[in-house]
Image 1 (cartoon, rainbow, N blue to C red):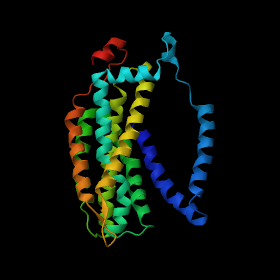
Image 2: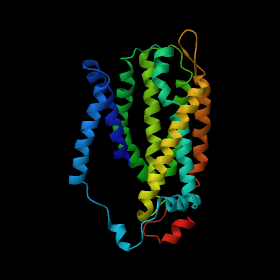
Image 3: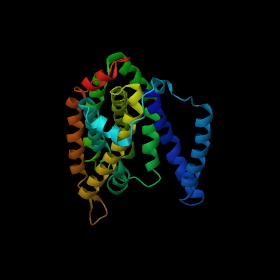
Image 4: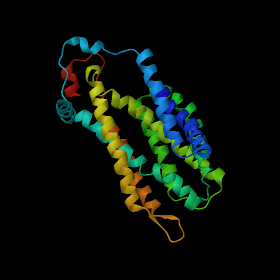
Amino acid sequence: MGFVMAGFSVASVFGVPFGLFIASLTNWHAPFFFLAGVSLVILVLIVRFVPQVRGHLETGSTRPSPLQVIRRVTGNPNQMKAITLTIFMMLGQFSIIPFISPYMVANVGFTDMQLTYIYMAGGALTIFTSPWVGRMTDRHGKVKIFTIFMVLNLLPIAVITHLPATPIVYALLITSLFFVTSNGRMVPAAALITGTAKPENRGSFLSFNSAVQQLASGLASFIAGLIIIEGADGSLMHYDRVGYFALFFSVCCIPLIRRIREVPAGAPAEVEKKV
């Protein structure tokens, strides 16, 4: 999971500045056309090289309908705790992230081009920290590592949402710490959430979880947008209130993750319902 998460960091380091670069050479449509072309190449590579994971289909069980998947997940208390953890994490993270860039420009003193430093610095660091967090998770346990990084993540959330006009170097230290600790909590959380479903049910469960994650991310951004207002001087006001909102849900994740249990490998289907 740590290495998989590192892929997002590589994308941040390369994608953001490259997208801005090709947009500056042509127009803002260029990054989207580039993304569409790369996606087609990736699709071909997936079909050609990624193996089909079909062993769990040999049991002869019928494929559940989408409604059955929803009922199965919502009827499983353990998986609903995992879903709730996903919601709380997104509310605590994506209420902050969409407004980092405009806040850094309007309140802290960044230029539009200097915004790339935020993603390059944070992405570069998480390339190295993600695999390390994965190894620490395997060694010390998912709950312990998640708790450590969640607690560490509270500091940059509080500082970023209260940051005044600040030298760029100091601001980059805080934003980089935010991305590193946010990524650090995602690695053990993703591993634990994945483990709450048996292999034959994991794809449908993770699809459901992904849909909820996207919904919670959008909801977090929407709520933050209702709170933040633009001042007469162009600065953003009430970002500190968004910070308190994010801190509340981030803290709620700590006791919640301790109540989530993984399904033992090779356990029968009845065990998944009872965990």
